[in-house]
Length: 94
Image (cartoon, rainbow, N blue to C red; front, side):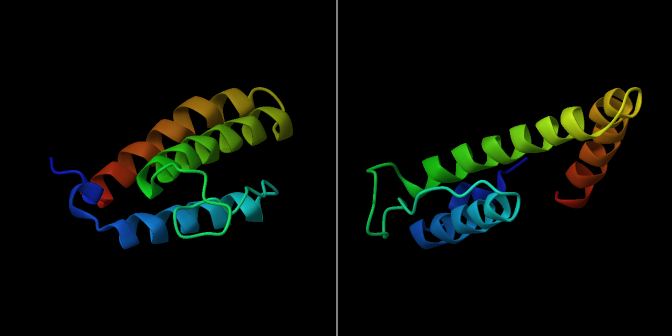
């Protein structure tokens, strides 16, 4: 299976990183403006930011499940429901 971002341009990596950062901001995680073309550029690539932001978004979702849902809903949502959504998304995004 070819990876979706395998042929992305630098601009496409920037655009996707910004989308994920915006999703994190909507959840209350305001990250610094440090992408390669921003005033506070930190030296990391847009692709590296994208990976980091995606991992942070995944972690944020897991923490919300654990924090906000009572048992057994948290456990079921974190496993059964998550796995179901993951399989559906993998099929849809291929």
